[in-house]
Length: 489
Image (cartoon, rainbow, N blue to C red; front, side):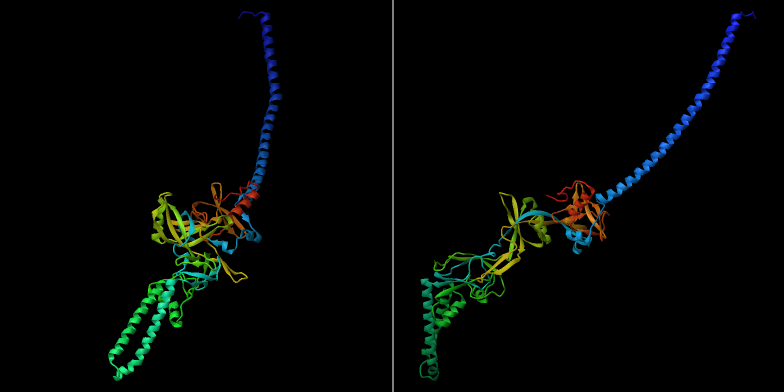
């Protein structure tokens, strides 16, 4: 190896020294800096753990608050509602409206508009004058209630033909009396042979001819409008009938003599066997007025039984005919809102055989038994009555078109709608749990609930007041209350 120059060795020494210094500085830096970095890393890790612990603590605290909030929400938003006895009374939740659920049959119905109408030939009873005369007394006024057999008015007869017919009848009665006496006188002499039997036979033939004449005259008096009672009175008193009394007739009730004779009169002197209340709807004559035979004297009305005229569409005629053949009872809804009333077990009377060409509606008729609401007499002794159902009153008929068995059927006031949900309130002591249910069908008065386990037969539910309880729950929860929730318009 060649000898190196001093400059080379000096450079080598300086390089080694520089490396040594660099190593010392590097070691010192890591001793001083990296431990701090490790401690910072450790502190950072611990801080994270501490933060996590605090976060977990806060999370737990928030969880407890959430649980408390959930409990508060459960009480407020409608899982249950506690009612005092006073609140139950305010809602009308008496024992009758807190009943266990029972499976029952339900008739699926269609709603048909209807109107109350007369029974043709039965509700309105016009009374006409059967003879010419002058009105002498009026015993009843328009609007007054009468019963069959009550006296309505009196007339003095002025019909010339009737007077002549009565006079001829009285004359024939007198002639017959004379013949009877003559037969009685000569009958003993003829038997003893004092006179011939031919004389007795002639008198008997004359008597038979008078009997035949009397029968024909009696029928003539019937045709003039006299009843058997009036004719018998003429025969017994031997006086012309000068006046006629008009009585309220009994609906479809006639005396035996009228059935036997085949003649039915609107003037009757007998009282009906069945108590019946009629209303003198209109009296069309006045005292002193002269009336002719056939002229209307007054109109009586019998409101004890009316008809409901249903007006269905042409396409519904087949369903209504099916209900008639099956014998299903109908129902009717009267009024609206708080005054609504439901009439059950109505009988479908008959169906119209024609369809209105203008409206394309099909009419059918239901029997409606009326109910008397008021029966009072005024200071003059006049009787006035008020009936519950009136001719011209509007209704809605429920016509059954199908029958479902073993269904949960609740009144419409027991189920409240809130948006897309429907709820009932199940009783548990003073607490009423709000239960979500599925509606299978709803009509104007009932709701059919799906038997899917939400509620069970035997559960006690509130049969009314569901809408008010829902509003109370919403009010407690602070939610906006829709006053129309649960109501169908």
